[in-house]
Length: 221
Image (cartoon, rainbow, N blue to C red; front, top):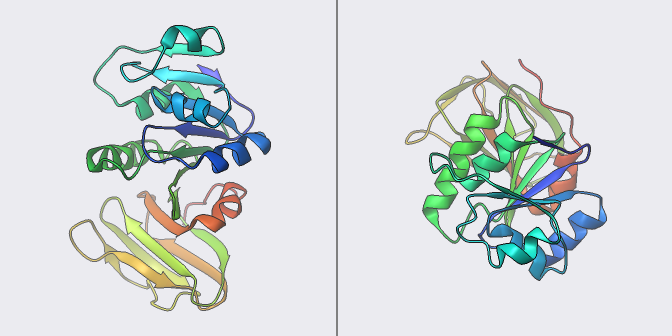
C-alpha cells in the first residue's frame, strides 16, 4: 500500500494538460502514473511518485524503474485506475486523463468512481470540468448563472435543494431517465440534499478545481 499525506493525482492515458500537472506538482500534489499515464507526467518534465498498473502501455519500464517506484500488478480483472485506487491511500484523489479520448475508458472510470466514492474523496478532472463524487449532502457557493450539473451514477432521490435555478426538491434522477445536467446557481449558497447515501456527481467548471479539493468530505443527510 502506498500512502500519501498530501492530495494525489492519478494520471491516465487520456488527454492531460501538462501545465496542470506542473501546477499540481508545485502545490505539493503527489503524481501517480496509471500505467502509461506516467509517460504524460514525464512529458511534462516531472517524475511520478509511483507508477502502478499492468504496465502494458508504459514506455521504457526499465528507465522508469531507475527513477521511481514501479508497481507491477498483472491481474486483468480491474483497470489500471482501479489498481491505483486499491493500492493507495490519500486524503484527496484527483483523476486526470481518465475521460475523453476513448469512450470505454470514460465509462470504466465512472464505474471506478461509483465503486470507491463511499471510501475516498474522488474528483475527475478534464479539459473543461471537474466532477466531485458526492456521498450525502453538500453545500457550496455558486456565482449567478454558474453551471452546476448533478449527474446520477445510480437512481437517486433528492429531498431538497437551495440556490439552484431548477430546484431538486422531490426529484429522482437516474441514468437513462431524468438527469440534472446544466442546472445553474442563482448566486450565493447552494445546498443539495439527497434522500440517502447513493453516490452522485457534482460537476462544475475546471476553474473550481481548488475549491473542491479544499472542501471537506460531504456529509450524509
